[in-house]
Image 1 (cartoon, rainbow, N blue to C red):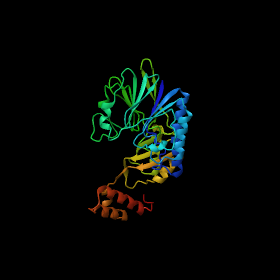
Image 2: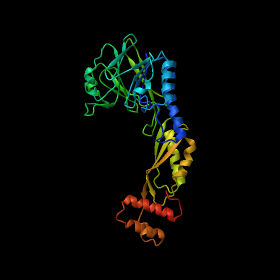
Image 3: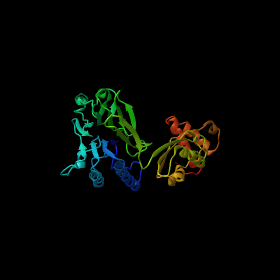
Image 4: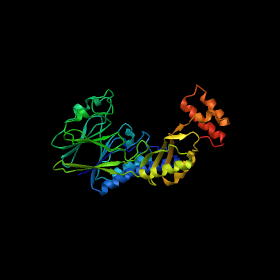
Length: 366
């Protein structure tokens, strides 16, 4: 039997943290389309069930487009069972107004609920954690060790009990309960670890990266379970339409924007950034206070090469004040006045000196 485990799709995210209006709308549609592509993959590859371990949607205000698209996919694939466990971003309004739920949509609540697969040889369990049930959840889970037991939960892993029990998964309490595969959601990066001698726990990560805190490969986990033996093979399937990269580039001692660009260029190639990528370039290192640095021009050098690119300047200023202390020019006098101001922090002095020297030189102050 083949099963897909996915989580944290966050459909209908506004995507405006980085992107301008048109691209945000386009990217929002891409994420919904990736969900649809995953279901097409399932249908074409003999997948019998899809586990959605929370945060199918991003907010309680779901657009009609997203709601209808998800319902259409579920109803258009009756041979696939959809096990949907709500996460902390999900609300009940996804299914509001429906007279009857699709028969292939399986839901969970605040108590343990189980469903049988393959004539009872595989069982899918799930519970939506709340502040009220989290303390008793681990004790009340009783499994049949003769079956292949999948348990779905959404929350932050913890290896021991936590004071804030809502959305905290106590891994220690789940050991030696007969769990074969603990299907988790909430963490947006793929992670698979041993739970105990029998079972494993897994976060598939989000299906698509949305921000630069979600760089790297994203997709879902494909399980292939042998019903007779209980053996299971798990494989992470990269599936995102776009990949996000944060590329840090040390530009120490560069003197011009052209030199900065020449330092950034190979770093992007080494990172594997391609035309469909979303890229954040982070400039690091020490730059001379008189360095000619035009970030707008630097950005324009790469804007057309990627779907989206942004530049963060985290360089520090390097200034040898002694070079200016005996300088009788306007620059020297300006530097001495700033350095004599005891109310300014050292880094603020450097920034002020840089801006002042740019202004004196007739350059655009950045």
